[in-house]
Image (cartoon, rainbow, N blue to C red; front, side, top):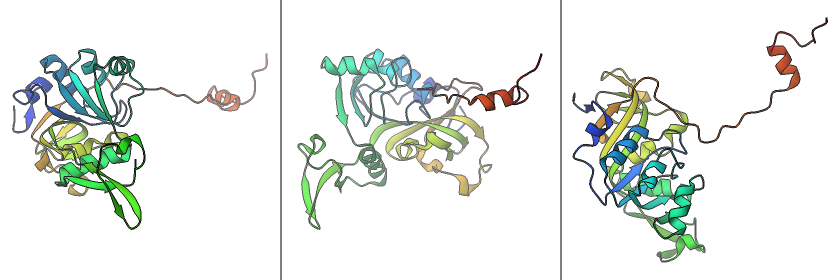
Length: 251
């Protein structure tokens, strides 16, 4: 171990995990998810977890791994449609789910990191989302109160970090990871590229290192899963051009 940098995911989570804890898990679909940290949580055997995530992974990847081992008791999510294991457990009454509109979920996490215990939104008013929640009138419109979420642990994937824990996220992986990093007692980050302190331009830092307690460097060539691969059919002319010309060969 060197400062905030730990040799592997298991070491980075050592002494942090416990049964029944609330965990933020960053990413969007399978993009930018903290795969190594999820696998370390699975291998630790902790159970009765409440996990906050935009989605629940798929059957054999991401949070789907923790659902397979039944280590998750409750999911707080906005989308879970790609995971058959999740559906089976939920329909059998073995798993709790708290659905949130995606923007509301993001704001609940951001609010938790900003020290805001609750806020009012019009999203979900008059639907099942608002059942059992306080409502209030503002300027002639009805709003529902949502609570901020501050977790025991946030597991985050970053593209680049320096040894002080300053983080840079890349493209779609910037969904949920930055706000979750600010909204937990302990934030543990897996990072693709690790550089020395001072090597990242201060204007390029997305999350300051003050929020980050521990990090682990991912091995070169680690697998990045694709949730749904969609390919556009090539036009005949484009395909012929790629082969060396647009005109057919003449015998």
